Picture 1: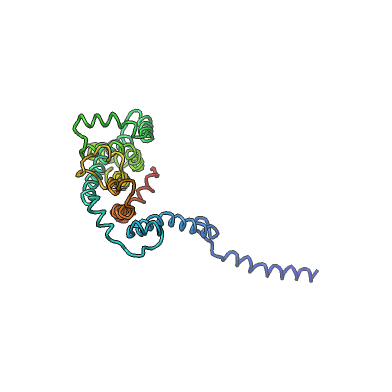
Picture 2: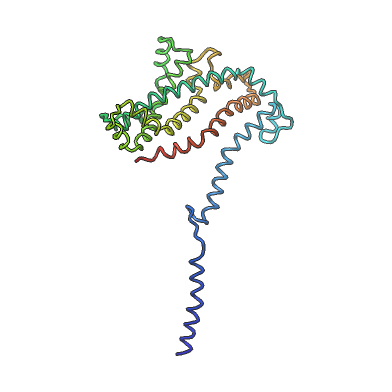
Length: 304
């Protein structure tokens, strides 16, 4: 009996430190744990390479001649050819195209902010009949291809004198982007506590003061997000710009690629240089507003 008890006592003593060691081991509190972290890192690296490599190839090919592009489409250029940028800037009239695109982007963003902001505020904060029906209608409008309305819109714009006019193109872009921006901004307005506007009304504020002094500052990330999404869409739009603009002085920068073609051949080096010039403002804008853009998209799905 004594030997058995001593053995069990020794086993109990030796097992206690093991239990303590297990309890003192640091636990990984990150989502996914230690075992999933390498997989997540590998996936993120692959996604980053998938996004960066096409831009890197564009940058390298912008400094190559067409002859070198045919023999070396991916590697580093043998001679850095800067003449592609000069040709793209002069023949493609990129300076004037950037100015026209800036007018289109700014005008469309302002129009979308005004129209979608008022509509989203009404759907989220006011007692509007058939709210769900209106939201469903906006969703259907987003899903419909805009090319369905091209022919009647073209004749209407011609009769109204809006053809070959930047203001007419701004109206089209505004109408195309208002439904999406309305649904996006509605989630921001719906996430603001209703006690704030109720307290303001008790203090004597009217509806305009509640909307502009309380709701608008709180929904600022949503307006920045909607403006950035709409601005990027307008900046790269080509279909309506080619159809509703005919004068070279009014063409946006997205149509400059159509000029880099000679017969059945295309100047690929000049086209890549023009593409690089075109994406530089977009990259700079996103780097400056990436925090607001990411925080706006994250908060758009939260409702209070």
